[in-house]
Length: 101
Image 1 (cartoon, rainbow, N blue to C red):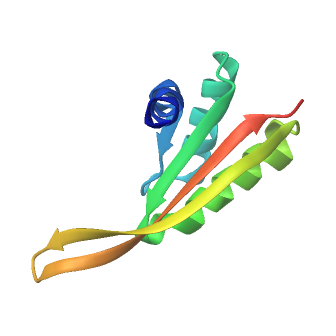
Image 2: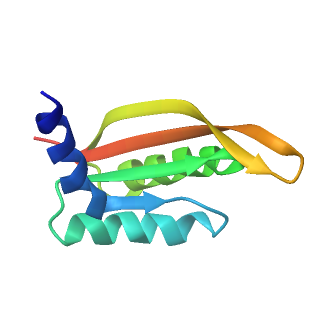
């Protein structure tokens, strides 16, 4: 069963868009480009303050550009990051968009 789980992750690893501090439309263009290249799914990943920008990207792509997309899954979590003052917990989000049937 572990083998079945690792195969899809490797397949979607190419279709991952990491959201950071750039303007929202830069990431929207990256998602649209991934879908236009034939990818069935695109995963948006972010952590910390970029989480709200990730939701914005997903909604703009779904509502304005590619209306047939559906949110396949949303995963949230926490990562421990080493900072100057020691370990800090940072929230994470992963949104998987896929083409509707």
